[in-house]
Length: 448
Image (cartoon, rainbow, N blue to C red):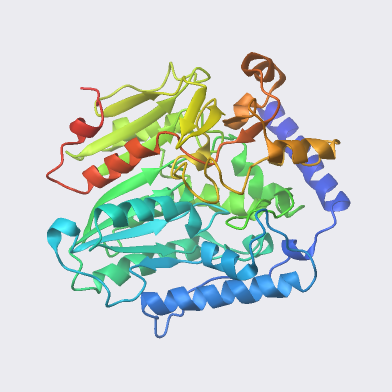
């Protein structure tokens, strides 16, 4: 065991030293000094916080553009990208909210995005909630270190993320018109929501959690090495920054702070006793899906709970724990269509879960196509052809990007999935979950 650990350490350190010596950091990989935060004295109202962060992001992107380093797929302007990446509030103005309880009056939703993401990843969920509950107040925070350039992830901390989450929760606690608050997290945002409840910070109005692609534990068992490797190199991976909504490159500091944030959540000691809805892809290549399912089965005791478990023919979940209140969703149909657009789909990727196939950026006909696996592979034409796509192109998680699966699926190129073909079911489940009069079993075929 000691020899194995030593070998892993040597390999990781050698890789880090290679990166440190071989990579030439661009301006995008350096901190801007404009990392998002919240003024503490006095704290702004949420609408002012939104305006401040939009301005901060735009200034950072404009400064980068002056160097000629910024170019987004889809031809977004910096103004458009700053609006996508910024926190948001629905309705946008503080006073523009109605009180009819049948339309969601008195409900508040705090949306918390994931690591290297932005609030844009929560836009589909926000739109679904607003459609169902037009009188509800919906807010999405921006995690410090995000929204500007990847370089700002080099010094961000989990304590900053926890503080901005707490700010969002307190904004509802101070709002006399809000009675019931739901925390809706994606990926790392789920860990922040759980920590908020676990640490019992300002949760008097919190009535439930919605956790999408819950990040209780990383997929990689070597993430604990990130802090050590990060002392020799800043970057685990570097890609061209083409996505107007989120970062493409990933720093060791991001991995280290994620590990420190989550290391106690899946160890079996924390028990959750409030209503909970989770949606997990069993094929997720970013987080440990089995750990998330085990947490649902062993650590949650709320009388109102459900787990949506997406699995496919690529899933190996024979050892996954079994318990009640799980909706097993099989994703075996390769050929699919959405509003007349035909596409091929293999399995559910991590980032895909919270996004509607109709999303203008990440959806079936979205302008962003995730073809990162072809960047730097020695054949520049592959990336361009993946972007164009064809009738044989397939969407899926990283585990289909192998020679064996290419032959089995008969695809020309594969794109990492950025939308959820089963989004309608997820939308109905979230809307039902926050309506105590709605029977979850009527929406989901829950195991008994």
